[in-house]
Image 1 (cartoon, rainbow, N blue to C red):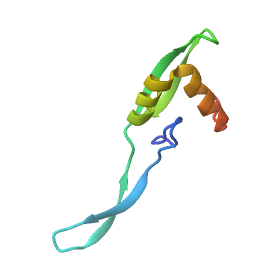
Image 2 (image 1 turned 120 degrees about the vertical axis):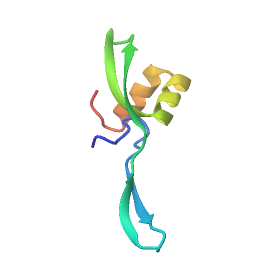
Image 3 (image 1 turned 30 degrees about the horizontal axis):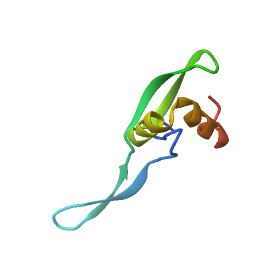
Image 4 (image 1 turned 90 degrees about the vertical axis):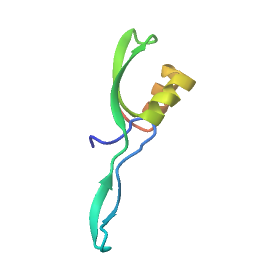
Length: 78
């Protein structure tokens, strides 16, 4: 659960490493997840979110109140 964005729902994807001889081994593509703290004025407190970089840009665009509403609509407790 560590490589998971609370806003966008981005999670690890899986694929293959392919060597020069074309042998394939399993690998994992993790999203760029950062831990970020935002001030939530409606509740008068800070919230700490685990967001992908795309999620951080989304919060900058729509605002923290709308982002928290979306996260709660997905059923995630903050």
